[in-house]
Amino acid sequence: SKAKEMHAAEVETIEAELRSSKKAHLEEVEALKDKLDTLQGDLNSREGTIDSLQSQIKSLQDEHTVAITKREKEGSRMRELFASQKDELKAELSKAKEMHAAEVETIEAELRSSKKAHLEEVEALKDKLDTLQGDLNSREGTIDSLQSQIKSLQDEHTVAITKREKEGSRMRELFASQKDELKAELSKAKEMH
Image 1 (cartoon, one colour):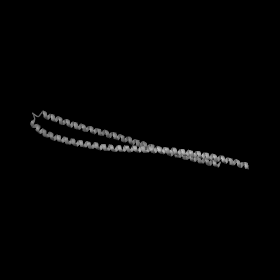
Image 2: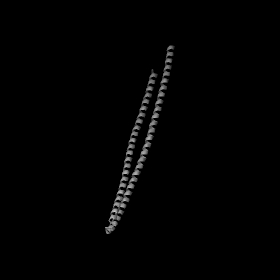
Image 3: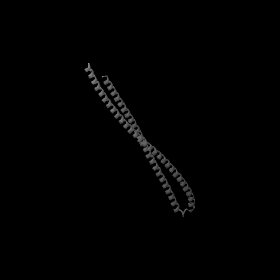
Image 4: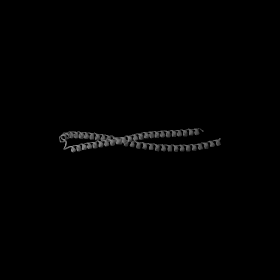
């Protein structure tokens, strides 16, 4: 009876350890899954930012093209106007040409400055884009690592459970064997009395 109680207590202890181990593994896996969800959210946010920057770059390039086309059309119209009035307005044309040359020079200087500013802004945005792409790749690497950890924990959990079950089975067999031996000894003792 005492051996039986000891056996029951040991089995109960093993089962409690198994439950505790299983709960701890499950909690750790859940925590890692939560981290993965958070990282996925960060990744999605990064992708949104990248899309926004790409749109901004395209918009800047479009604005730049429109500005150049506008300046070229203005210059073309002015040249046509001066050519059509050449015979009638020779004196004014000379003055206008000087003004036009100065204006064209200013426009070209502004255009160069504008083009340079646009190119610098586009380069800066491309640099930011490269940085964000690096961050994105880093996040993907982190996610792969966490997924590997989760698989490793699940594998360890499975091995631990299998080991506990085998130990429990061996102990039950041992207790059963000892119980049979005790019964035999008890029976023999009764016969001797």
